[in-house]
Image (tube, rainbow, N blue to C red; front, side, top):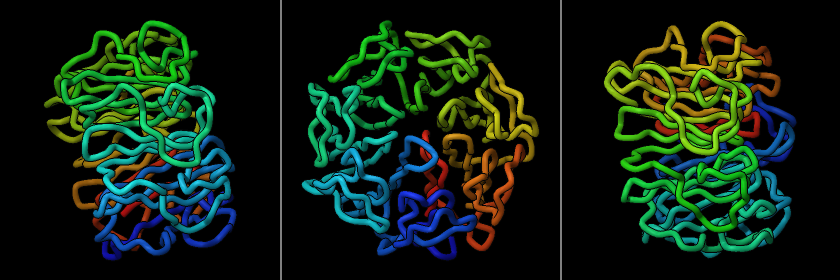
Length: 364
């Protein structure tokens, strides 16, 4: 972007845009306070409903800043008080990645372990308890981690051996261990190896296997697993459809899923489409992937509660779906079932984030 500072737009009722205000919404990008683009190396967006949300920024020095709602300690500052501008996550200085769920947060550390903080009702902190924590705690029995993801009330980790581990809420099978039992310590997702990417929706999960297949498990009422059914799956199933040149990226919104093909870098989408978040010009739910027309050279993708954000090869940001809170960033509040231009005055976005249970967007 011409202005490389971290930008945010959409719902701000919990201060989740980080600009120091409590304005209800911003329909165009506002600047998150106190963070220069050069120091931000990772971002994440969390939220568990239209009126909540929180943001995380990973800095180059391994520290993490947080802002927004904090009723469960998801900001990791040792309090339960929200704030509308970034503050430090305590006791954390060696982070290499961040993820944000509904009301909990995760950090990947340099040594391959994972820290978690916030709500823990369903064991989503993975520390063997169900007590919330306003400060980071260590996820038990987990090392060699290279990637993390957070759903509404569950968490995922990809280990360097290509296996996937999950913990937290599991009533819909989103942990993929063949059961519906909640887990407060990580369990291995059944039957997966050679995994290269992971993503977590509200109550479903995705993985790329061998770079050329997408697997999915968990809640499926809207077809978000892409297996041409609406049956919940407690073990991974194969997402239908061909992937030209493999799969370059995956992302999951609340009840929809997204993938970027590796060959031509086109976007495919499936699942719930109430607000046009699949970007195919309709509001028809899709139980198998459909191409999103009008987009090529897709480099990054993120899914929100009912919206989708993508970055193209030239750094331009495109959005589609629900827009009642201005989360599409196009200056209005009208939903769009086809991609529109966000950040019209900015270019070269390198990172994007959207919350699986919230209505705002981040980019820098």
